[in-house]
Amino acid sequence: MALAWQDGKKAESDGSESPELSGSSADEIRMSTRAAELIEARGDEAIRAHCLRVATWSSELASAIGLSESDRNLVERAAIAHHVPGILLDDQARRRLLAEMHLEVKGEPFVSNDVRAVLETLWGRRPIADPAMGKIVAVLEISDDFDQFFESEPLFDADWLDECTNSSVEAMMTYLQVTSRADVTRVIDRLPVFPRAAREVVRQVANPDVGPREMEAVASADPVLAGRLIQTANSAYYSPRQPIGTIFHAVSYIGTETARRVLLAAALRGNFSTPQAHQLWNHSLEVAQAAELVAMHASVKVDPSQAFLAGLIHDIGRLAFAIMPAAFQERFQRLTDGGCPPAEVEMCLSGRCHGEVGAEALAQWKFPPEIIEAVRWHHRPERSSLPLSSLLYLAEFVSESQEDLPSYVRMNAATRLTGISMGSLAEIRRTNPGSLESLRFVA
Figure 1: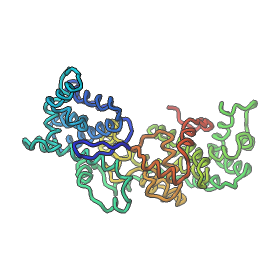
Figure 2: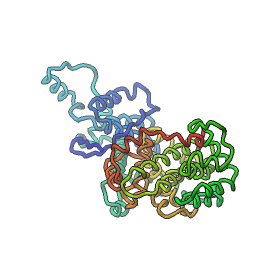
Figure 3: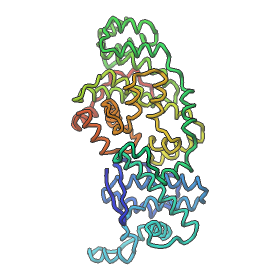
Figure 4: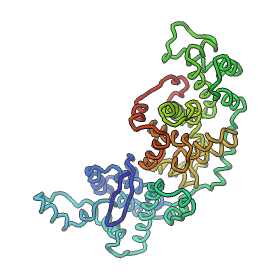
């Protein structure tokens, strides 16, 4: 996590990339884009990503409180430039600096006069000129503080965070929240019930002592499971010389561990059957395989089969958010398209993230307590002493999901708790198991 200082104001930033904002004309953001390019040239992508997120939050907040389109565009442009060093906004100081460096002064100022007015008001260098300027500055300040709160969250004690109040977070959620925690709970109740047959498959197959004959018995009870198992054994990844036509032959050929993974995945795949959930399932399959590999490399004892299962269902809470009302979906899409991480957006719009929601759903479905806890905290592993929580966090890192802000603090805590090195994670990142490709949905 990078640290930046702007006129005595501390800002903590991540190292993520965020897409450029859309919706503003080229003329309106040309000079602020030059400021963003300056930041990029300084090599601080973390600050650039933070500024773009703040611009997205500012635009949404400005719209929510009824600011005009021109004021919304102004606050966006000011947000993009709000970490440009103050000396570059002072034309005389900039000219003196360049002269001392024997460089020629070329081109226009780095930001326009209206953006400069917003920034100088934000930094306390000039008084608030009128109520409209007061609202613009307040929107920018709230959005900046809000994003920094989530960046710095891993640094603070969990009990303190639960009890503290942050005025910027409260203000942002007051204006942007489109559903309540109770509404989310009601949506959880609308999720497809986890079938009893699938629960029984999970219960039996998750047992590490299950052998080929038991695997055969489990698959034989369900034609879908049997078909998936035989399909995997006949896939290009395994390339058998002769077609495999029986369950036992399939289990024997691919091995009991792979058969276990196939049956677990096949039993859970139906919960992701809607077209909107196909990409989520493919991601879950990647995280499951990564989690299994992390468990194998970890110095602490974590059952790889349990890690695989936890990876398959770690994002089950996202299914609940996928069936939220249109108002939630539209605002969620705008914010995430602007570079705000999904986990942070979920908290803003509902007061809960998909880890918490998924844990509640898994509790209703009677999953093991350690898997429920791991799913609950897989984006905030510092809140759990369970190695499986940290393991899921690292598996998300390996899969490059970008669902949350990257955090050195969380990464350090997770690697320490699991006892795995960054070198091992890098090697896992380069590994493509490929053995379960037949269980993916076609993009």
